[in-house]
Image (cartoon, rainbow, N blue to C red):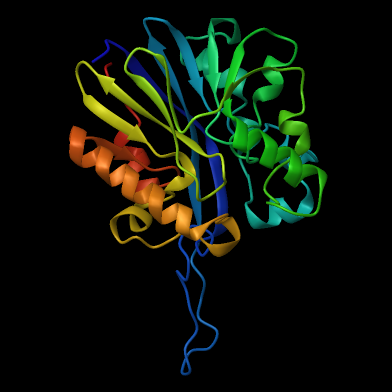
Length: 268
């Protein structure tokens, strides 16, 4: 167990059809072939891990100019980042008592547009940026071809960055902090398991799990945001094993109700 604290940084919200979050969330029937869709907002957030070995920024959120041309129109329509400009990374850090210069490491769960938009702040610096090899390759493949996933924006991550590339499915680079690959949403999505002195074990799933129904009811993510369904189920079983073995708290990627419960962070 490590004596570390974790702050939760709110980075705005996205508005989207909930069928992206939960496969088949709204389906037509014979009597109601055109039901009303659930169109709602989901939180975007990052973590600031104050660890004895350094300050770790966990994901970098949406780009603050998402609405002003950084996101292409199709992606804006699908995942409307209506307030991203109100929560730029540097200002959110300052509001929480930190400067960009205080960040010793950055960890990227994956490089989708609502998770990698703040990497520009580390362009040209020597701050190590942890990301899995499978994710880095898939992000470039997707952004530079018409294959892969459409949720990558090349300008988010194509910078002069000090990549610290993860190669294995489980790697530990800090005391009691383990980076664990959870393929499914993307091939290289990587979550984090932290064993805390005061709060026990917490598993941050990233977007392997968007919301409670994905985990509790095993309802997959929307098909267009699921790279591999078989891999997704295997990752879900791995997370359940971590929860059982360590009596862990499991934190989802975009669950509005859970987000309200975790806003105060851990070890404060």
